[in-house]
Length: 392
Ligand SMILES: Cc1cc2nc3c(=O)[nH]c(=O)nc-3n(C[C@H](O)[C@H](O)[C@H](O)COP(=O)(O)OP(=O)(O)OC[C@H]3O[C@@H](n4cnc5c(N)ncnc54)[C@H](O)[C@@H]3O)c2cc1C
Figure 1 (cartoon, rainbow, N blue to C red):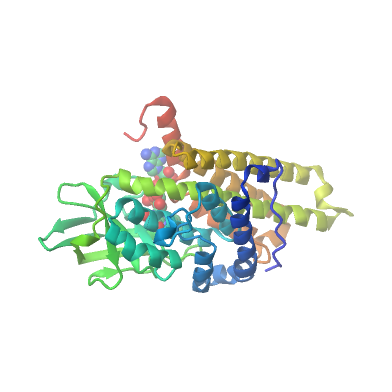
Figure 2: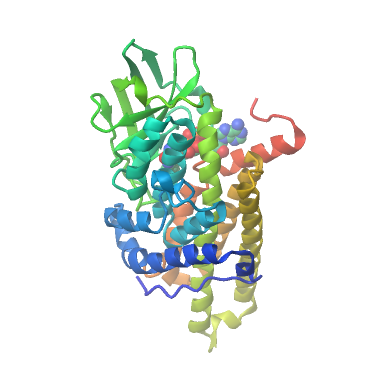
């Protein structure tokens, strides 16, 4: 892969809206990605392998639990710092950002918010340091967009719970020590259970043959009469709102992350357009190529503003789930279009691993699907503005 010459676009001087802490956190993550991710990521994506050696570095830049309080090992940062870290990691690779998102928003967040003090003390510091990795099991083979239909279930056996069922498409599953599993009790109510690797009857077969998020490990979670200790139930929230609360936090991070992928594609195409000569001119001098670049920076700038504002609302505790849906949907769609245009601007070189664009493009196909598909988020906005439910 070519050396990482990334220069972040900031067309509307949005750095002026950031605090010194935001900029310090972001720049540390940016430097780390340049040093530790860019040189190796193409190779790992080609091999379809998660680069486990970067786990410690992810922990050091605060990517595991950025907003979890310091007393539990988190970085104690605000929502904008959290977003900026996700932006920088996804600038490197959406698969690496997925690993960090799952660890922070889908594993640490529910333990912090819905767990008891003993659970927080036991799990959060180890997850924050990367000593333990976690995964989040909501999706099932027959229930993706409609998780309420899940069939994974547990029975109260007196001194323990007995868990049965299966989850699929689970990021980090093949190597996670801890799984947050959403399952129905005997009355049909959804609860979160902390399932640990090594519990008899619990297996995590890896999903192969992915053309997307190849540097992120994906797998199934199979529960065959798994005895789960009673103290592993998350006691403080149940019902579908519990997993959806985690998804709010993760989708917010994705909204920022997608900007990172788009910025990388734009920056690569801009540089290439000034270097690549055709018909005796740099291709950036042709109006059609300028149109592509001008539209890219316009869309990136709009997404940056939308997402910064969402961060302010999150910091104030005022962001709604529907507002988060709008940003996730808009920004991933924006990034996937920019990746496609940028790839075309590189001509044949755009399909090679010499540049990051094709990898971003393939990765974004997962990002536009997981944590609520593009269409599902549109229906959430539709429901919010009309009050009429298209899901029923
Ligand atoms: C790489 C990867 C990693 C993932 N990681 C995780 C993870 O860590 N944990 C986890 O729990 N899940 C994970 N997922 C699962 C992901 O969240 C689901 O794939 C997603 O929610 C969509 O579910 P589905 O694939 O079953 O598609 P389906 O729900 O079958 O949807 C198929 C199509 O139908 C459309 N559709 C569905 N319902 C409606 C409707 N009511 N109206 C209009 N259109 C509709 C959808 O928009 C979509 O286009 C991951 C997925 C991928 C690809």
